[in-house]
Image (cartoon, rainbow, N blue to C red; front, side, top):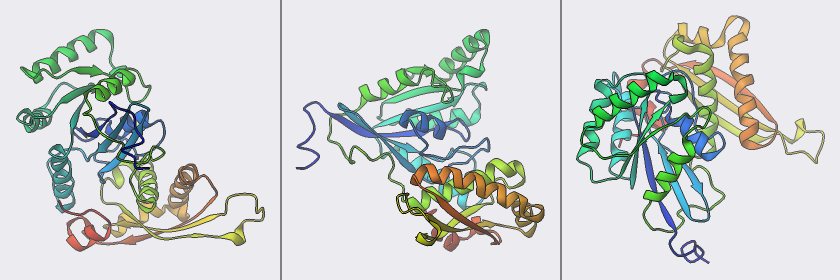
Amino acid sequence: MSLINSIPEGYKSGFISLIGRPNVGKSTLINKFVGKKIAITSPVAQTTRNRLRAIITSETSQLILLDTPGIHKPHHLLGERLVESACKSIGEVDIILLIFDACFSPGKGDLFILNLLRNKNLPVVVALNKWDLLKKEQAKIRFIEYQDLLGNCSWPIYPCSAINGNGCDFLLEELQNKLPLGPQLYPPEMTSDQPQRILLAELIREQVLLHTRQEIPHSVAVKIDRIEELPGKNQNTKKNPVIGILATILVETKSQKLIVIGKGGSMLKLIGQGARLEMQLLIDGPIYLELFVKVSQNWRSKPSRLSELGYQGD
């Protein structure tokens, strides 16, 4: 039986692109919607690089959420490709979820994104994320500021917090209501379309960003070299087999390599421990992780290296 024939009459489905400046909380919001970790997060801006699709399926609808890179002024080929990817998604979806960081008043970057969307014939829903960080009087002022920014755009505005979930249910309900009629496009048990290798590599990169912060901002990439079962490491056959993962962390300079490795390998060990814990949740089994660090000068500006790492141009 096809998916189209197995769904009830009046079923809704569609693609929703999350658009916003870097570090407004798009990935965190997707994880909250899905109910588990699909996209990596960190306090570092421009964490998202891949246009991940997260899938939420219910008895009445299926939402496919596109987690896009933050729209910013690019400074290298990688940045150009990320912004191209985010902008291209605007014309490929049914609904736009425009996300602002409510901790800040609207800026030039917010206005730039708003102007990108004004002439698009698409439903737009606005989320004011990080609302939990505002005091009551500050929240009133901020809401008015973003109303003024939107001007004559009659787009609904939803204050919310991707961290504690406040307002997220109302926001998700609004998105469901705006979906067009359509069939299930993905199996109901599927929550992401990303290949396992990409998800595993992203979990490692997340730990690098979390532990090195500004020292290794965006000059790091991760490549999964090998994934295989290691039955010899598992003495109890009733358990899931141990999965061995070999990965390479790419940086652009020797000094960055020293930072990632740390004194006596301490930083690399910390990165590996954090990544392994997240991987075990993803794979639902024990992980043996081995990491290497390699210098690849100016990899963010080399088309061949970007393609090898999966950052294709649109």
